Length: 235
Image (cartoon, rainbow, N blue to C red; front, side, top):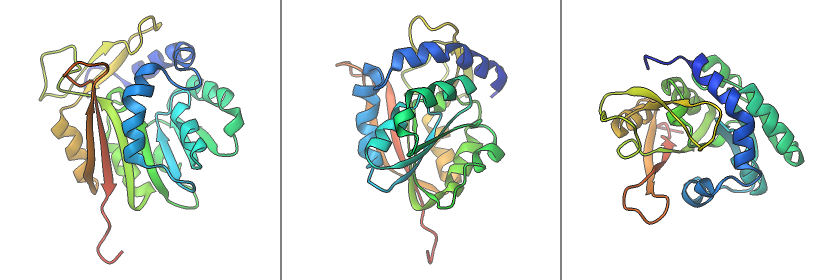
C-alpha cells in the first residue's frame, strides 16, 4: 500500500514496544479482554495438543493464553524489541512458546516458521490493520496449516473505524492505538471485500464471523473472522 514503508511502521512499533508491554501487562487491557479475546477464543476453540501460529504477537498475551489451554505455540512479531519483551514476560511458558522475529510481509521469513508438523490453528489479534501487505501472510498461513486448519483473525472494523472518508479504496494513515504512546503508527485500511478476497484467493472459506463493540454502542469496533483451509479433494 503506497505512502508508508514497512521500515517506517517498524520504527513506530520499536519506539512503542515498552509502552505497549506496560499497558497490556500479563493479561491484556480491558479492550482485548472484553471485546477481542472472547470471540477470538470461541472461534479458535483451543484444545490441548493444538499447534498454534500466533501472528504479530506483541508481548505474547494471546500466546500465553493458548499455552495455558494446552497448546504449543510459535509466535512472531517484526519488532525485535517487542519479542525481547515477550520472552522476558513469558518465561514461565518457555517450554510451550517459541518467540521469533519475523516480518509478516515477507514470505520467506514466514515460511521459515515451518516446523516438523503443520499448524492446526493460526491466530492474529488486532494486527492486520498494522500490516502493509497481507497477501504474503495469507498465502503462507495456508501453506503452513494442516488440511482443514483454521486461521482466526480480529481486526478493526473497516466500515466504522477509520480517520478518512474512504472505504472502498485501500489507503493508509497515522494514528494511535493507546493514548499516550510515544509515536503514532501506520494503519492500513482495507474494505471487507478486500480482506475476504485475500482469504478466498488462498484457499480459505469463511465459516465464522462476529462484529463486536466496546461498550453499549451500536457501531462495532472489531470484526473477528474464522477462515478455514479447504480440504483438498481426496484428502
